[in-house]
Length: 467
Image 1 (cartoon, one colour):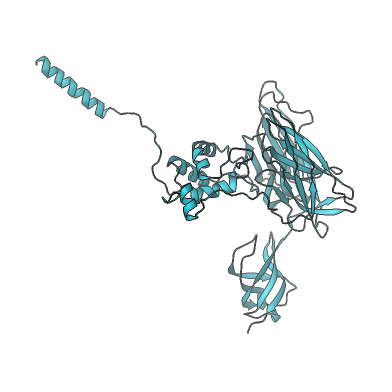
Image 2 (image 1 turned 180 degrees about the horizontal axis):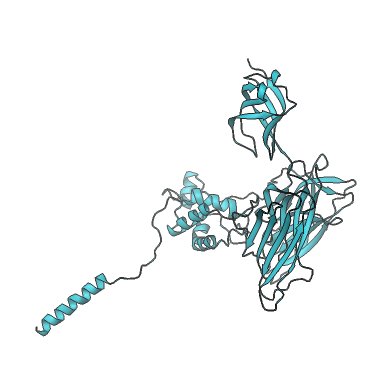
């Protein structure tokens, strides 16, 4: 074979080898998605982000499409790493009303949108000129920091001017507030509004004279409200202590916050009090990760409302477990990768009832050589003795049928806020209700009482007779 043939064969072999030899896959972004800024992404921003990501807020703004598009890769990575929105409790261990973590569906929305070059809408891109000519307003994330979530406060207390000096690190400041109470009052809720949201990370409130913990504030949950029938005792002449957590500042900032108090008309049905567990080191070996534990046996039934951990540098995880008398265990909280800059309470969506004899424990893990106080690290458990109180809701609807023999009504009703949407449903009635005076077609108003044993109607009143 001559040299020309040899070279030809070699060249052909090299070409085939180049085509057939396996090559590493090259990752690339998606090019299509149904997720849009104007629809899915702005909802995520409203629900989880704009409490901090606003102009003059704690973090860079994510209000407009342009701001969010520019930060889309950082948003995507923070969502995948579950660093933002800040929430340390692991899903599936406790159900908390102030949960600010992204759901898996929301993470999928953010990821798909970022990887598909951040579409705004269905293709009708609003430019500044178009908006000015047509009068259309581009969709933006929205926050309303002026609105009081619990309505107009019964008592509004200014916290006074508090100057935050330039500082390289975060700091806490203690403020004592005098509500000038001439007589004892019952506090059912409170709401805090910082004067300078760009420097306030969190806050905690308690009663000076009794030490009773009242509430914790974070940017995404600015209020606290006890379940119906419950209230904190405020003795006459008592004071409220505010512990304000300020971020680092490069220039002096004057914060003039305010605190709204909401009073109950009647004393609390059960005294709300604190149970404190001081977790102490159980693995004292120098240079090793530190495990802290504390356990108490409940001497009476206890219903839990909230958990307030104390955070120290080096914290890695916190677990709160209830071991029931029947040997079953219930994980009330499991939090990990806890950011110190976001101390937050964990407020149960539904109060958790634990029977007498339950072992309530806290287990905490800290990094090696963390500075743990000799007295331990406190976990505050807010609750009351006894089983969970029955919850009451208001119903208005039309009776469709009456079964007096079995004490039941079928009622077609509208929305019952906080309980259920509009529907036609069969209800058991209270033992003191006289069904012989109610007929199909009557319009009624009633209390819906919801307890561990189910739901029933009480205080039924006919507002309009059937024709």
